[in-house]
Structure formats: structure tokens, C-alpha cells
Length: 101
Length: 200
Image (tube, rainbow over all chains, first blue to last red):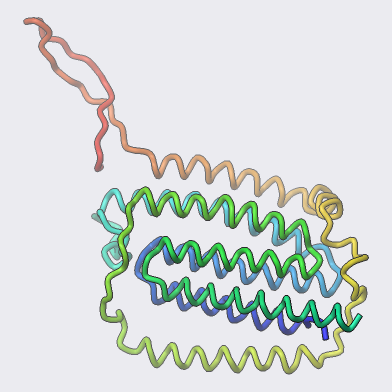
């Protein structure tokens, strides 16, 4: 019995939920950022699984573009985190609940 | 053939265990550096899944872009900012634990539904053997990217350019030009020079 499409979908759902739980539970801005990356990756797994099982190329092209957007998001997000740390001396998101200093 | 199928399933189970274990470790871990290393484990196991699905190009890009570039950037920022371990604090919301249990129950129901219904649905794989499929190869992906998806590709490059400029602007130390009045051996002099300030 080879791995089925449903296995990949269930695994992807589990990984996405772990990411959501991390975003809700974590307080550190960098940890929340990494959980968001995990959520993006679980969606990528769904794309590639559908692409492979339906023999359709489009899913993998979407994954490529999602990866490029994730890289851009990483650069800007980490820049924001550095600016946040410089202004508040803390990475705790509860300390940064106001945009104003 | 049966041996090959069994072997594939075995690899799938090992990779799934690695992915779920590393994911949970990442959320439970209080030190962000260890969380980053667990996340690299998740990325590596996902690259293994892409190989199993017959997508070698996406697997390579996963390792290069995610496990390579993005995680190096994250680890670099963690070390630059000298992040300490998270302290244990009471939960922000009182109803978070019941809500989490409720959410976990919904997740399990959904996963069971996916396995039950998609597994039995009459979805047929047109070309079940991933080995002679042309889909995941670099050549087909390149052709698709530069014909049908040319406009998204160009928009992505503009987006990355904007991200580069934005990241430099955000992370740069603020420099301002101040008028500095100074005495050089009795003569008063006004000069303009850049002064670095840490805070706005």
C-alpha cells in the first residue's frame, strides 16, 4: 500500500494546526514568525500532493511562487523584528501591543 | 513491487513522525534557537515528502531556500538580538485551554474525515507511477514558469525587489544630519555631519 493522497492532506492539516497553536501560544516575535513559516510549508505540502496525484504542473508552480513570497516575507519580517527590538529592548509581543512608543 | 510499496510507506511514516515531532518540539521549546533547529527538521522532512511525491525540483528549492536561506537569516537575527529564553507567564486568556481542546477535537474529526472520505473517493491517479512522470522535473517547471506563469514570475521579482529595499530601510540605523557648531582654535565653525542615533 503506497502513501495515499488522504495521508498527505491529513498530515498537512496536522502541521497547519501545530503552526496555528504556536502563533496563539507563543509570545516571542521570532517564534511566532517561525510558526507562520510552518503554516506556509504545510500548505505547500498540500499543493505538491495534489499536483503529484492529479498529474498537474500548476500546483508546483504555485509552490515556487509561495516560496519566493515567503523569502520576501522573511526579509521584511526580520527587519521589523530588529526595529521592534531596537525601540523596545524586548521581543515580547505583549510589550508591543501599541504601535506608539 | 509489493516490497517497494512497503518501503515507500515505511519512509512516509518515518518522515511524518519526524515532521510532527519536530513541529511539536518547536512549539513546546522555550529557547528560540532550539525552536529554529526543530523547524529545520520539519523542512528537511518536507523535502523528503516532495521527493516521495516525485517533485525533485521543489525538494531542492525547499532545502536551499527554506532550510538554507530563510533559516540562516532567522538564526542570524536570534544571535544578533541575543534572545533569552521565554519566561513562564500565565496564559493571556483564561479560556485558551478549553478552546485548545475544542480545536484539537475539531482537527481530529477533520483528519478522520479526510482519511475516510478522500481515501474512498473515486479519485484516480492518471499516472500513478511517479518514476516516469515528467511533472516534477526542472525542465517542465521552467517551461511552465516562463510561458503560462510569466506575469506572476515578473511580479514576484518586483515583490522581492520591494522586500530588499524595505528590509534595508527598516533595519538600518537611523542617521540624521545635524548642524554641529564647533570651535577650531578660536574660530567658530558650522558644519554638517551625519550623527548616528540609536532611537528615533
